[in-house]
Image (cartoon, rainbow, N blue to C red):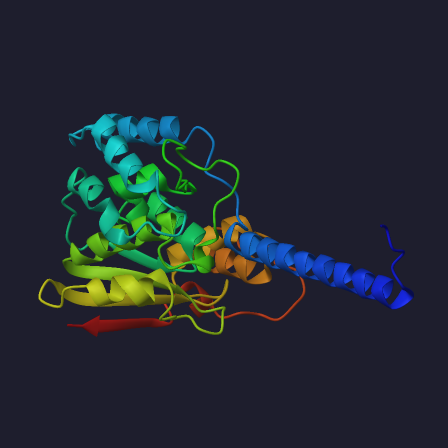
Length: 295
């Protein structure tokens, strides 16, 4: 026989129902927070395979035509290291076979390291043609500016919808590859090496950066004779080639006009007017803020 529930029983049921709904919402919110925190970045670069293999062929055909590599094998080893793994479970050692397929001898006295000066250093390297950066090596050339991560489910391949940010996990697939590449690059350094740091930020040398935390410790003191450190603070220094490259990007800066005038004076050309403002010493165009370490 049906019995109409009393008011206290009804209130208790409603209260219990609200509590269940509240707990469910909390669980959903927590899951969303965790998922969002892990997958906060863009997904795998579209057409990743074509880009990587294409760059490999560009490298062995146009950039370093004397080199010999099996581009298809490099891709297979790279893919095997990443796919069928959770996005944050790709360790440095997982790329071991890929790096075994990409051995490369590097020249002495030409390696150029950088920290927070990426664009300037690459323009500097391209302008002088005297240095090798990590991005000038085969692995650096192939994977520069790309993003990738796999999916733990079997046969799901790469995740093109979202990948974790570098800072969200230790065994990030992109970070692990660049960490091993950086270690190899630094370990191969010999003779004189050059480092360009960003002096316009609070910590020009940061132990948590790839240079401070990985490459510096991988330099072999028995092979490296001299470390030339250039700290680029602003457009007023520290090195004439670096400064001219910076001025190409910001030509209206007064110190760029002053530096150009002083350079023209050296070659006897007419000095252009730089407009009103304080006068700068021609020492702005001379090497400054350099440190030399001898091992």
